[in-house]
Figure (cartoon, rainbow, N blue to C red):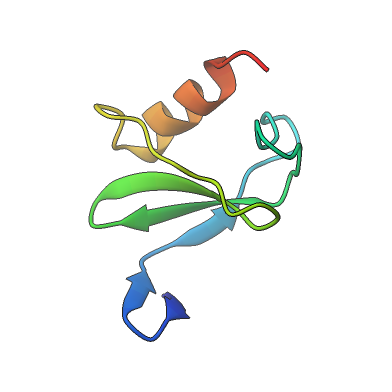
Amino acid sequence: MVRRNENEVVDAVRYIGTEDKPCPFCGSKQVSIEEWMGITNFVCDECGLIVSFIGKESEEAAIESWNRREL
């Protein structure tokens, strides 16, 4: 578990892979995949973007949605 601040605990953290698309705002590949309360979220370490996909709570479905978007 990772604690981002004193009140927020993140269940799992790993970074997107080299084959995954970068952050749509800043282009960074430093995007972590984190689970908060059963929802997969993408968090950019560079610009602070946080993205989740409604109905795509599993990590596999969320990653598929992340990579399907147009840049």
